[in-house]
Length: 281
Ligand SMILES: C[S@@+](CC[C@H](N)C(=O)[O-])C[C@H]1O[C@@H](n2cnc3c(N)ncnc32)[C@H](O)[C@@H]1O
Image (cartoon, rainbow, N blue to C red; front, top):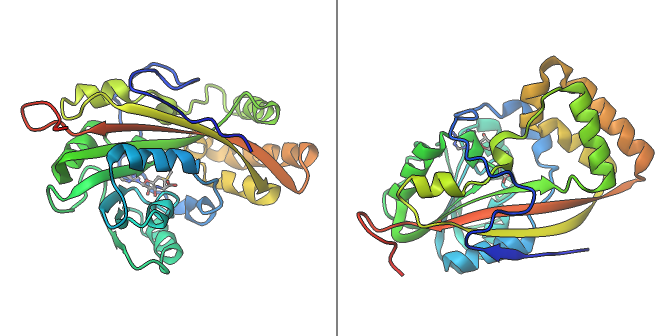
């Protein structure tokens, strides 16, 4: 297992293009077709989650709002860190998976809502998180809503898991994808969020936290999890099944029962500015 935790207030994470996209990737995008297999996806690199919590200054007993909580991939580590979590999720089937996955935890409540309209009370959260969901929102609107529900000195965090595309097998998978879906792009989920966060005028310059870990996963389940890849599913359209078959075939040939997949978790964390001024320290 490798783990490489890097933190910088201004540097762009490795391999992330500098473009600051402001378009909406898909507000209220319906995740229902992806709900069953989403559960199979890899975890976030634990050291990155720990570092986000440390940067936000939250600890056991604090109340966090996890938006676009889905099947609970981020909600669970937040609960494991003994935080209390209000999980907000617009898609009923994703919420159902998340609820069932977290039913053993006492300190979690699930709500229907979005990043733009969370319906949560104002000024109560020291931390609001978006695990692979910020790109699904109208991001400036989601930042305004986040600032509304945060405590005055609270923090916003968004994070994504990226496969390391320099890994030889992952590079071959990329080739298969691009061959079948010309012009395929990961869009906002692989872009630097810094400019957009700063441009909102609501947050200080974000700290970026990056960590890599190789996850050893059952190859079949990993292939199955590709069916939950909404970004690819949207762009592949009717050809999505063919792309999934090609990935499955390649993995069957190249990996055994288990597959080692290097993932990089990338997080941006920013403190809310006090209205009309700097963020309180
Ligand atoms: C890629 S999944 C991430 C789920 C989970 N947070 C995780 O870390 O794996 C994206 C989630 O965002 C939700 N979503 C879609 N539109 C949204 C919006 N406007 N605001 C908040 N969440 C949204 C989807 O329903 C889906 O559950």
